[in-house]
Image (tube, rainbow, N blue to C red; front, top):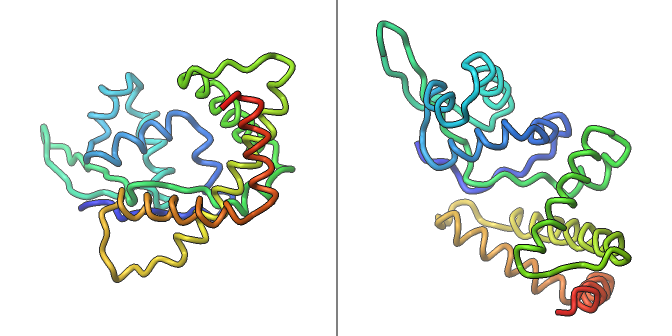
Amino acid sequence: MEPKGLMVIKDPEVAKLLSDELRRRILHLVTHKEMSAADLVRELDKNYSSIMYHLRLLEDAGFVQKVREEIIQNKIQPYYRATAWSFHVSYYLDETMTGDEEYRAWQIDLMNRLMHGLEAYGINIPEDKKQRVKELLETLYIAQKKEFETRQEMRQPEIQLEPHVGKSIAHILANVRLTEDPKHRAAAEELAKLLNL
């Protein structure tokens, strides 16, 4: 069974599941192909009970599902697949869960990874500008998520699109819409100056 296009996560407890790196890695792997727990053990170099624990959490939350079973050495071995090609934590949670320490730690980690990601594009940020760049990245990131989610909600599900096409169109429409927002434009312009773009 092929995953559907996009799942927007609006439940804070479900969103917290994605704060765990191993669960994100499992989800990434089963998005691209069906895998058994044994396959995941080999791929991720983790023990079987740990993989099964995380698979059950992901399955209970609706991120993965069993797609088939095989009998191997007289044991039933289920194969799992992601339920969507992409998972999007709602902007609403970013705005409302700032008081939740676990969720906020995940957000801080994400912003740090985005900052580190700038280096992959040859962007080196002076130490005295890093905090402001991080603040602007977070502002732009949340605005982009909010607008992307709005565009996704407008999508007519009866019209079939390849996952990449649907996601790309939603991003383009979100970016076009954000050009009309003066706060977003000001934040983007300030970031461009700080990054010498």
